[in-house]
Length: 365
Ligand SMILES: *[C@@H]1O[C@H](CO)[C@@H](O)[C@H](O)[C@H]1NC(C)=O
Ligand SMILES: *[C@@H]1O[C@H](CO)[C@@H](O)[C@H](O)[C@H]1NC(C)=O
Ligand SMILES: *[C@@H]1O[C@H](CO)[C@@H](O)[C@H](O)[C@H]1NC(C)=O
Image (cartoon, rainbow, N blue to C red; front, side):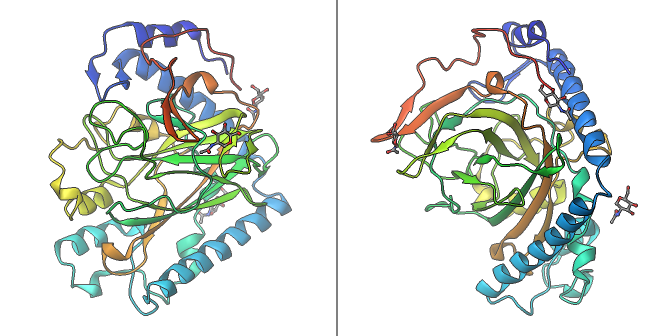
């Protein structure tokens, strides 16, 4: 699958139809073409993964994933003294809506602590693929290797468990996973652009190496929203990076970059609570957002699974997804970094300019 350089140049050189925030350029036609390509990449990845679904090591890994997620879920509940509380799962959207309307109606909850774990954690997650769609704004290079990225920010706690499988081998990917998202007011840390958090801030950003099952865990917060975009969580997978003694990393190639989206009912419920509900920026639903349109294929699903840890949002969410990525891909071209986290703080990338295309992009698998 070849990404056309001309296509991308067009995307960036025409006047944008709508600007989400500084640096994020949106041209509908070029964007749809780009998504069509991303879609095709995801189809190829999905087929590659499907071909090995019955392999003994893949079946075993799936079983380990169910046990692991269940154990993480139980641990998170114990840590919060929620052992006996009911909880909610994304497949139970009707209940969630009902729950949102009447927080005390626990009888409306379908999933309880007696629900078999395979029913909750055993969905066909191997098919959940997030396409390598182009998104660059506000990536900060060399962020800190850390699991907890919350710092002193308020919001709904979100334990994020992401599993990465290399579509070339169907084996766990050995990558560094970089996450970032905006806070409850739609503000990103780490960048100097007007209205953002500033170079000296690092909240809701962090990096983790995958374990032997290709898994990373983060303690973060459910993202807020900003102008023109539905609520989303950024992810980058770096291949071949070196972890440094000072708790950062250097080098490597961006083999995957994407955004996770969330069920609209979950977003709406969370946006109705403090401090999210003090954000005056108009909301953009998943249906309207230009990046969620590609979710139409049953081959992939950019909406992660989730359960609420307890019967209140303040108890937080356990969110998980399994993603097939091609570790031989090189998406550096689509991952310009706005700044770098270095000794002494953040530094602007002098070459960062979303409107300028310096060199043609490489080909992608
Ligand atoms: C997972 O996919 C396989 C093969 O497509 C199918 O047989 C099975 O029923 C699916 N399981 C679930 C839980 O959806
Ligand atoms: C970590 O070490 C690298 C290599 O020496 C250096 O470039 C970078 O500025 C350091 N980062 C921090 C946050 O100290
Ligand atoms: C992964 O990307 C490489 C490099 O572009 C390509 O040769 C390979 O065919 C891709 N693998 C799959 C399963 O698409």
